[in-house]
Image 1 (cartoon, rainbow, N blue to C red):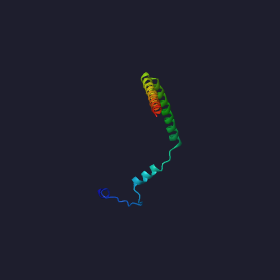
Image 2 (image 1 turned 135 degrees about the vertical axis):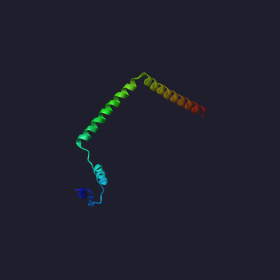
Image 3 (image 1 turned 90 degrees about the horizontal axis):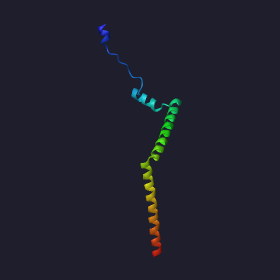
Image 4 (image 1 turned 180 degrees about the vertical axis):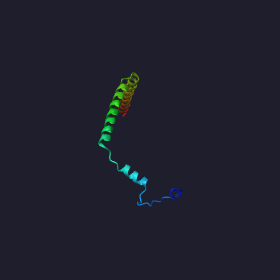
Length: 93
């Protein structure tokens, strides 16, 4: 009994591809199932709805409204200054 258990068993490889390469190729070639595609689409839709809701909440915050209003006022001032300078330059010529 002890002689049989101490012997090594040697198996010769019958393929040239390693086990790691086989599994890597299987994972690369794996097609997504209809269930996983549907689940992904549902997650994206849910995330989009959450983002829209968050954007609406942010837009309604007073600090955000003040910042947006400030930007609009600055843009109008810049436009007015541009038009004023242009009018001055045109009147000089």
